[in-house]
Length: 283
Ligand SMILES: [Zn+2]
Image 1: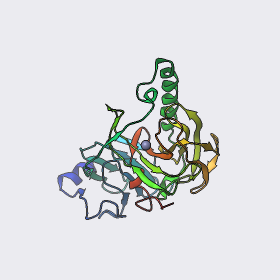
Image 2: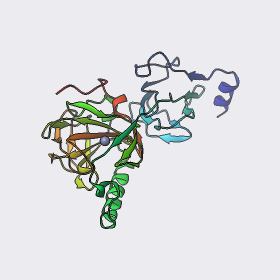
Image 3: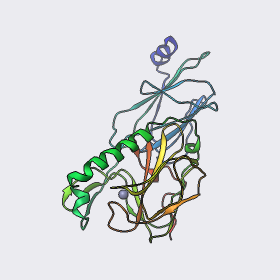
């Protein structure tokens, strides 16, 4: 603590300022710690420190692997700086600030949805609540997996039909923002695991349709919605690129597509900012 105060008092703390591109691999000026990933709202940041060094994000300890890897996300609407702190036993602490880069989001209007999906009847509300709770619980897992460390693969070939952050107006009714991406492709197109991990949920849900949620370690998870077929079950280990299902339009969907989500615990991030390639391969 004393070391950290001294560091701050001398003005030696580094403040990370955005460089020309928000998506490039970058190393801080301090060689003891590095961060890479997107600094935009909805970005996933992956850090590396010397093994055994405890790290806090905004005052909360995060899981650090035996190799010194850790991860955290930037909220879709977050504007305040996020503090990264690492405590070194034999040297001054490291204190850093990540300033999320503000984004402009679209407005997307979708019509023609069956009204039961926009204003669900009372008899399905209980089911939806159970399913929401199952998803919430799965996303609380903080496992040892390190699948999050490799950049993500797009889950399927197709056309980007929905982007992250759009304000959604469904059948004329304003809804929550779309905190995922949609890839449209013909029904039956294979869907692949975006990264190595363990299947936490594979089930048929009301809004989500054919639904799979994969844990990639340290609170990072991806989900795949509206599948017409599912080929994995809860507990299965998958590798990046494994076929886990088929594109469909089950649940709340107006056409065949994969709604693909990326989370850090309950925080919904933009998977398109964590992929190797900026857009899905064309079919
Ligand atoms: Zn979607």
